Length: 457
Picture 1 (cartoon, rainbow, N blue to C red):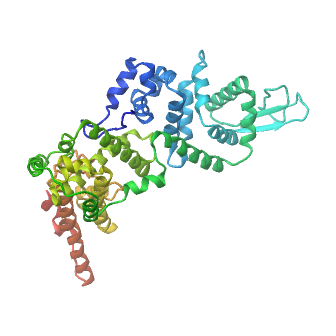
Picture 2 (picture 1 turned 180 degrees about the vertical axis):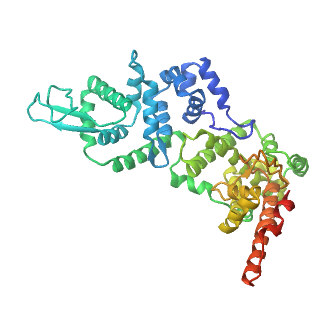
Picture 3 (picture 1 turned 45 degrees about the vertical axis):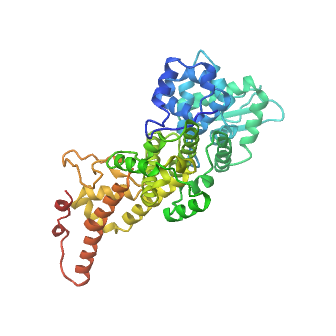
């Protein structure tokens, strides 16, 4: 069976991309083992190694894997990343060995090549071969029947594109002429749209969904509705020791990351754990497509994978509070973690909506008067909410005014959500209403009188 694709998140269930990249770099995996790797894991490992150091890996990957690597690298949402295309071609260019270029051309999407030919190549045809070029900088590969001018202004891109076209002509002349004709049948915009659709359909084989299929996985799910439907679908059989298990886990997740999630995973069989890992892999892929849709942004994706695990943990905490037997062994056997994830999103999106209610002028004032609170609001307003790293789980701040750590951190507990809501409501929203009341009555009111900074810290 194919191993689940997990990046980031709790260590007990994650695929270690760092460990995989080291194994690839050291040559510890056989060719068959490399070819058995999921495309996403392979891609992140190659990024970890660095493309310039991954030549030997690219030599042994299958064409299907190589094609997926290019699809992951060359697209940001529905936009073709030409800069990444040229970086890739420049990195594999070898003056003494043509094998890397040959494999690249065998795996790259022909629509991408047609896009580039349409953009950078001017072609003139003659019914009868001629020695006279139609203009300066034209050259002919076929003794005067076809004349080509590469219009790339960057000298290195001009050289690389010329080399690619020459290699295609020399190794597959029919494909060369098909590409030239294909490039005349549309515009760059049309080729980009076609290429995006073709890329999406190819990646379905790697369990990477289309955007319209990923969206439902990232809709919030009301916990009360979820519990109602769960009760209707499952029997009311509860393990004898389930409440003892819940009581034990309750102590675990107070102030500890990813509890009760990790403890719950320890209660399931290996077979069920594998099923859960596969389900989480699908959730991660859907989250990447929905929130980032650019596999080349490895830093964002690694953080997003942590956020997904955080949302699952939030959802599990929220459900356990209402129905403790959910994390009994019997309960976990029937639990869909995609639904647990969506319950977590319900609470995260609710927190985001609260942050979005804060007027922009109030946020602008906060950015001058109380930067920590302003940073918190900005992080919570993001599509997938997070918190600044200096906010503790209980809502208190750990801020060195000289060296403020503003990097985002994952929301992984209901306590964080509750604390953040209290900060938003009491320190910002209620104060803003107070200011509005003064303004409407014509009285003067200075935000400096609110004393937000002192109260918060």
